[in-house]
Amino acid sequence: MGLNGIDGLIIDLDGTIYLGAKAIDGARETLEHIRSVGKKVVFLSNRGNYSRKMCQDKLRVLGIPAAEEEIVLTSTVTAAYLLEHDPDSQAWLLGDPGLREEFVSHGVKLAATPEEADWLVITLHETLTYAELNSAFRAARHGAKIIVTNEDKTFPGDGGENIDVGGLIAAIVSTTGASVSVVVGKPSAYMSDAALRSLRLPPERCLVIGDSLHSDIALGKRAGIRTALVLSGSTSLEQAEDAEERPDFIWESIADIRTML
Image 1 (cartoon, rainbow, N blue to C red):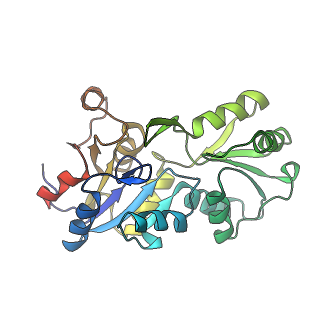
Image 2: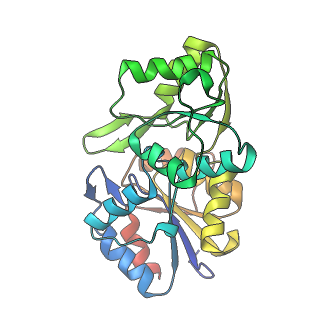
Image 3: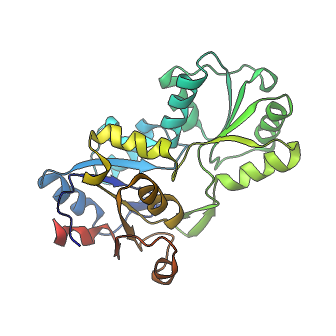
């Protein structure tokens, strides 16, 4: 099976393009090649603690230029969800400053206190303090509905696996008895629909490339998009071969696509 008919690439970031602050070997050159042969690109990430501007800046430092409209993050899609489904609501945020930056850029209303919040938004928070966690607890205790950018338990970083949003969700749910109302991140249709809108292409003309069976490959399978798993992040070859839903392609890294374009 080749890549005939593929005009758009939906590309994950963590574990696919970079690990921590370092680009994966060959990623920059591969993206240059992808663009040179006329393929459209959207970067689709479960990162909710980044804004698109922050992500754009990080990619630029790595030598990978990207337009803002080519970046779709869970912070982006979560903000859009609230504006569409509950535009007059107020949100309380549990996450790094990038989440707030993205919400402000979309015009989402933010609550002045946890008790006033209609929604509690939970994402990755790498600089978490007890006071911030306790404020989120209070928002949920006072009836705020919980929307989470993703449910991933870990993500790949410089020194190995790191705790992800799942840990923060567990802390709030277990202490308040509340349940999560909306999960935005991959593999949800919210994310695949946003990526396809960005590319302006139908599913059958796209390919998902990522390092996670649960997030990336499952997203493609649910949306009818072909999939390529890269072994440069969180998944081993053995795990890929044992998966119930196997990807269409298994590559050592994104650089392997160059021989197919």
